[in-house]
Image (cartoon, rainbow, N blue to C red; front, top):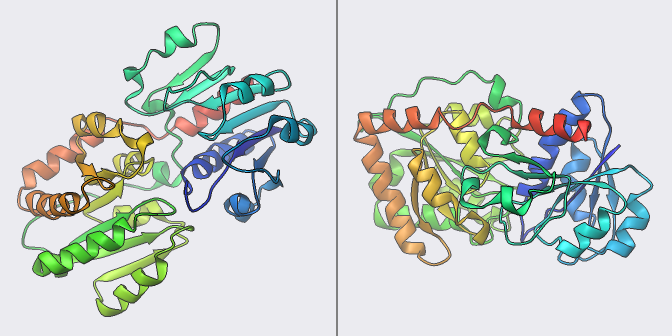
Length: 342
């Protein structure tokens, strides 16, 4: 059995656990068993909904506890996938005395003494993984390892045609939590500063499991029929397929948009997203700033960029062509295979 140690909550949202669930699906598909280990009951809700066994460790999610956790975890298997930015070098080192360790290291801020290191981000070349982990550690680096759900591989991508004469459909998303209420603020800014453009858009708003501003967004949607609220989304690829543009915080969603060839405007809301700007811009996506530092500027740039894209069909097609080159969507399968063979 393979143990996956991760968490999800209002503060860190669902990115970690969602990518782990995607990898878990591939591991199970290949005939192995998976169990999730989380800090608290709230963190395990998504994995439980997907039918996985979840172990609640009853620890502070900011302070993984080797002594307490190892006593429980060693009963379940000998391979441990760690996906939390709060795991320290010492924690991982101690776990390696008991388990074979697989670890996400996409920040490159600490040394992770693991058997397998994963960083599927296109900016991985920014860091010297070969020098840091040149001791026999297997490196799974680059977009060929992006763990996209099967729906993004099996859904036939529709041809997208844009023009400034048609009402466009925009998907608005900010992870599982959106602690800054960025989606609500973007909608409000558009309403107050360019209502004509706002009303020309069909807004598909994706509300995550930990969104504390859900009721405000639902209330706004009741006032404006061009706002459609989507909760507990299982058909994300289908929604993307029926949209013309995506507005998103930087996350794995950007790779999903690439797989669906959906031109994307993105912004940052966390430090671990800071490297995305430079590298995704080179590959067709449009970066509009850090929402934490320049909220109004980001909102204005989003509005301007929507107009720019919709009035230039050649630019729109060029973005799509660049996005096609980023990932083939088979990353989860490759990761699962490496873990099973470890």
